[in-house]
Image (tube, rainbow over all chains, first blue to last red; front, top):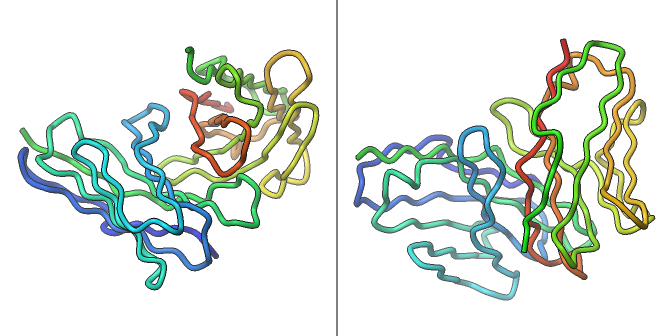
Length: 112
Length: 114
């Protein structure tokens, strides 16, 4: 399976701390995307990182990609209570024409 | 620019009935994707469509499920003779011209089969 697998499954931190979530996959990829989902809501796109990129930043978010280890990490710095959500990585395989394969997600809880 | 729109947001059906879920992509987007999310799980790909064409339906159950994206109007995911196991959140996403770009998701339709 090429499914992305997030680690940890759940993460609980205090406001102001950093949160790191990891994603591993098994096949070659075209790009890897991170999404956030608040409970009972739709998915919000965070960052897309392509296979030839190693790091991307967006505000308090930093994503790294290591294709040799088939892994990616999402770092949220200076977390806020509003960051509480589920975070998913999704991989786009170069041969699967638009199909995104999602992991099971990491549930992040940020305590005020 | 309005986002991806889905309706209805909640749908209740009894076993054996039909469910029709609608998705209007973002303006200018010609690629539509449908995903299903079971409780406490990640999203599972179902089908990828462009206008009037099904590109990849590898995630669609073989029976009772169909999808279309006509030249005019929204994309429709149709589930015939629903069963309790069809209860899930169904998300639609759209992207602009190429399939390697970001997919923007709608708010989802939560289907409950009684």
